[in-house]
Length: 333
Length: 159
Image 1 (cartoon, chains in turn cyan, blue):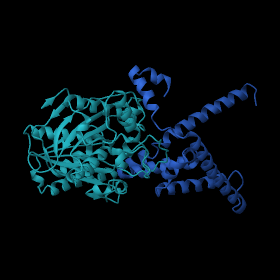
Image 2 (image 1 turned 60 degrees about the vertical axis):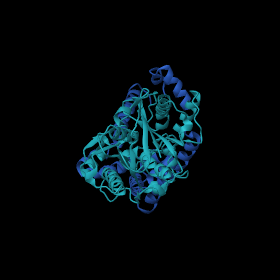
Image 3 (image 1 turned 180 degrees about the horizontal axis):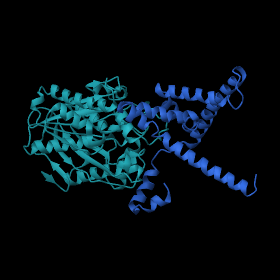
Image 4 (image 1 turned 180 degrees about the vertical axis):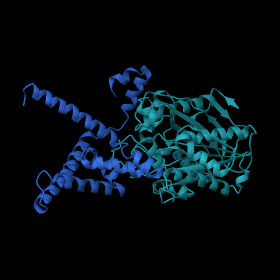
């Protein structure tokens, strides 16, 4: 049901039957390592290319989520997924393995929540009973496509971020036990003219702020309604800017509940510069760490604002600025 | 950001650029310059040492010893790239490892390793000069311009 300008309230409150997070070697040494279902020591996952490794991550996340919900592959009616690769090959190739009807989405790193919002909408409108929503990214395949070869010796600036090697998936259903998706706010594309691909945090912060403000305006609630509000991958730089932007707009955001998946996922001593990024960042932290905390009763209501930078390697070489987007989904226990 | 780019932005965008700039960590230019000087100098010292060894022990002259010395630096750089160490040294050293011949070897080696998964012809062959290509093109072109200048000055009676 539409509420306000750009928010959906799901009256049937779709249930997250199960969730899974798969990570790579660097994530295994990170801050939330114990919340991953499978951690790989090998960045290649035994495959002969990074792209195949990324697909494998997503396949494993889907297998795990089906297994945890005690369902069969045939029970899955729709599969909604997105990733960062050209033509979202990781998602499409996983859909080939899964054999379920597939909706591919691209919202860059916001794909995780875009998928969850759309899946919830389908469940809420009786279009399906079981849907998997997933997203994935791989550090080396993203570096290869968007930046330089992984072994190339360039010095990264302190504003740059580290793409997470990981995949997260959830299995949504109409009935059952578990955390429930209650509402979602679909973001607008915001472009504040930042064109440096090594400064995603600054580029995406205004989009996150726009969506956060829209969410509370549309639903007419206060930030204190939530136990935790987390942005997807703003990192240290973007998080600080988002906090200050909200304050400047007169929006009262309690600092103790406002955090960022990109800051949470890695330890302080890991060489990730400003923090983690990528579809896998918000997907693994939300579907692993946060949902586990909800199931343990530590969190009751959370709002995840996944942020995405909608540029391509071509667009920034042509000196285009970076359009950004953020989608918010609220999950309640 | 240059003025030309800033002019195209709306006032709101320009205001945000100022707002975000004030909150971004800066590149530590002085620290990076010192590190680049030390590491770059260290690499050049090794090169000089190698040249000396070739002249003293292997019967090379000052002119011919340059080639084997460079070759050894390239081999070391490519090996370090292959073992996945070079990019980590470079993050610390910055321009110190990019500017010497080792940096050039690293661009070719890293691109070749990266695109091995697309095969030898389209992958390695097609992509190994992905980064080095522009260095070669620009290098040859600037050498050409400098040569033209030299000839012109000589023709005018200078030098």
